[in-house]
Length: 108
Image (cartoon, rainbow, N blue to C red; front, side):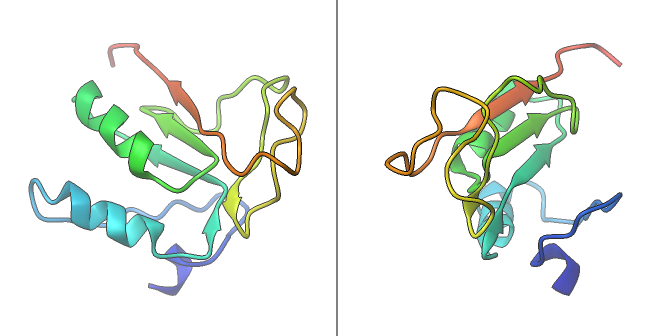
């Protein structure tokens, strides 16, 4: 799916189906892009969310929320989505990757 492989900006969210339990297949599809600015995981299983967040190739992973962040936190992406992190101590061309995970623990 073209939209899932491009770096779209704006109010765009790709929601795709997957077979029950096929987390590794979902990860392969999610990482099969040249970009990796941010991603989101929505699940009741926090262990699964943390596992997925470690495997996603994205600069920021939101868990049970999206685009709620501290503007003072380092920000940047993986692959062709930026180069390093800015707005923080971790900004340096020598740093290849640093993952930021944000979790919303509120009960809905």
